[in-house]
Length: 115
Length: 112
Image 1 (cartoon, rainbow over the protein chains, first blue to last red):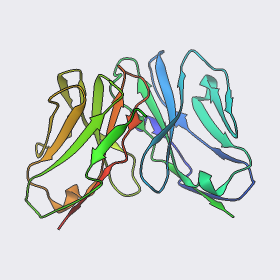
Image 2 (image 1 turned 45 degrees about the horizontal axis):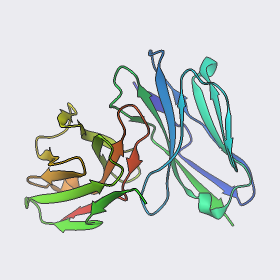
Image 3 (image 1 turned 90 degrees about the vertical axis):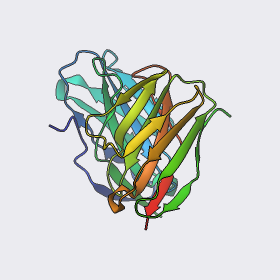
């Protein structure tokens, strides 16, 4: 079974629009970690955020914000006032305490910001 | 700046000709990972080293091997590349597990 689901394969928005990337995860562990990575066309995966299962506080970093809801097993990512430089593939990932070596990546969401 | 470096960035090899990809890091992280990423897919973990301990994923083909001679360096050896091995190979590091992983820029492998 897919542990991390990113249902949106591709999204296109016009510059300055807000966009939310969805991530739904599945785990039986009580201790786990969630991550978001950005992969621009250059190919390098860039770490954006890590959140552990005991911290449901939402986080804001500049134009980026994350909404973690254990009740719905979701860890959604919102970009406010999108810019062309935000165009990339975004991956959500899960790591479980019992199998800490394994990152379960979602299939990614390709975001295109149109100028 | 501390970083993860992969060389070469682009590698072309012939079908069946062994190839080695290299990764080095200045982060002094004790865990190093190798991923394979094919077009429009998520990265797939091949194996990782936790310190000197090698951990192979169950579905990683025997054709893929790895070496970690010291903390800073890790190599991916593909003994007999097939056309299906053409992909981006990503190296990552982390301080222990399951902390965030820091990725290198990747090596794009082409098999002719």
